[in-house]
Image (tube, rainbow, N blue to C red; front, side, top):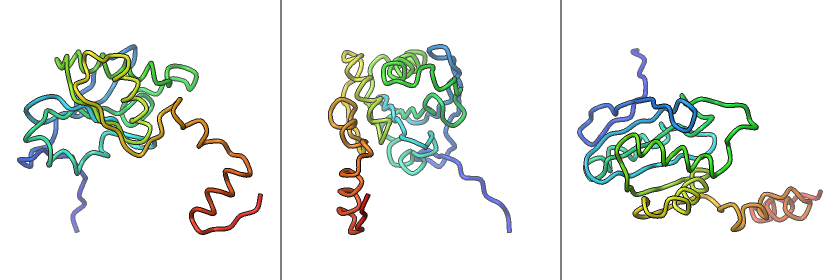
Length: 168
């Protein structure tokens, strides 16, 4: 039986373009394909650009998709944990990437942690982001901090919602 390697393809079945650029002081890997207005896709944690492999064939006929491996993930550089993993730095990474790829204005979607970065990018570069969408994410400053507190009350409430009882 032959081994198959998963690959991301566009709407015509062609493999996407893999590239690397130096952005905001790091080497960033990205994939891109398609025609039309640019749509930047930001993955969550612990994922990478391959996360979007099922979306690419559906959208590349209408959009030029750009899906980077965010700072610290996939084939992008992984600086020390104390250097540049905040939302502002990641927003600057994405703005620099899109500029280098020739996309001064673009649509933007973030999933999970990528939603947080997408929100920061849209807030910091309002004139460049045409529309923003995000899913599966509470945005920092708008509920994320409160939902991530590991207190006995929060743990018990989360298990209770799932039908599991836990006493801490």
